Image 1 (cartoon, protein in one colour):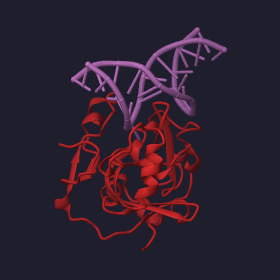
Image 2 (cartoon, chains in turn blue, brown, red; image 1 turned 180 degrees about the vertical axis):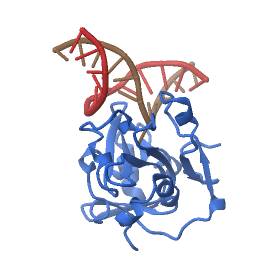
Image 3 (cartoon, chains in turn cyan, green, red; image 1 turned 135 degrees about the horizontal axis):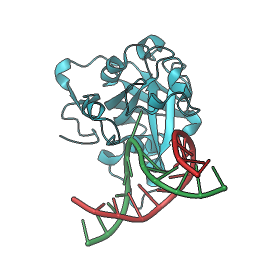
Length: 203
DNA sequence: TATACGATCACCT
DNA sequence: GGTGATCGTATAC
């Protein structure tokens, strides 16, 4: 299957967020492959989006968002969870798409192992990757993979799948950004596949 | 140097 | 439905 190239990520952020739905997120660790279908995304768009980390300007942390599309932006939140983003749009314009949930396709045993590391009980398959922190834990994604070029097909990349119809996609406000200005809180920049059981938050 | 807090999750009631 | 965990980053001193 074809690896998504820079031209895909360089589209406007809302387009990338919408069109990443249904594509395959692939992780390779020591020759072992894990694969999942992207079912939920969020767009963080530029210096005027008060929910976007880059809205206060260029810092060591947000520097990668100002670079070329197709790179990874991975950061630690709440002291324990990693978040996976792909840089979008034009170089110099800081924007990214957060991957919020995937449907596990292959490598479920490895995902299960990695998810169990910090949990008392073995998580059910339905609970493996239905959230941004969970999918990073399942796929072994951490800051070591920050600022990597995802178009190279090494360690972490996205493979093309046939596009979804408009009718299969739902939109709504983003999750967990109460600190942002009201218009940004209300912006319908979260995208998910309708009725998909692996979406992090229903309804 | 010190402090506050977050693009979350698991476990508890 | 509520809350503690846990630490990098930004901001204030």
